Image (cartoon, rainbow, N blue to C red; front, side, top):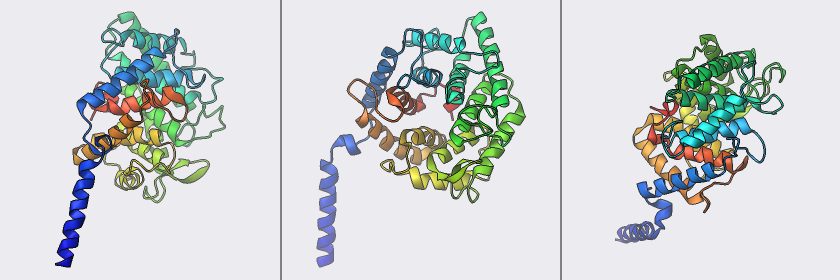
Length: 344
């Protein structure tokens, strides 16, 4: 009887605890809450675009921030010609086209991380292209993206990865996060019909495989050149990268999935660093997996992001409000399926 009484008592306490927990912590994310958070975030981005059409992060990285913010606006469903944010998207396209160099780089060579700007800028343009109706602008986009793809190949290191700058400028330094950015941009271009040499992708996939620790059981290390332990954020990005390259059945995927689920499955675990970056890619992986795991993760992640939103619609975090706000908006709008690169 004592055991039954204790059990009944504990169950009663648990029921009351759940019943009186604040719904903002444990309740299902409603469409109303989600739409409100997204609308406020998009308005903040639109209102903080410069007159020249770009965004910056603390006065830096205009190409990268413009690419990311532009993708967040595209995810709402607007295009260069239609939708609420069409003027903002057109201005962003104009800015990035103005940053296209003869050698194919989208950005500025004096930027200490210009491959990020190149990657996100190219990804944004590849997502714009399919909805562009003006023939002259389409031809301009084809030219810029074709040269940008060739720049990706030229900037790739002998090991198959990319660093913060080109292989030549960075003495062949490589690291995982910029590599993933280039691969997603290249996949976006290929989806748009831009020729992408197969050897560039093949070398990048081989690079990711070489960075795997214990066949993926220990995750993906930061850099093939400099080593380092497994990184959950880069490991999640690597899975997304493999999926983008069509490598759904790659031998690394099952072990990497177990690794990232262990480290990122608890959304309150911030000990790994780069939390928003990690869940930007982990959410892509989980969304493509679908099912109950996605639904459970989605609700917990979306609730946390909504709770952390500032009153003006932005979010705070590393690399400034533009970066974090665009990052979170891409996550919250993933189910819109407005962008080919994030579709299942």
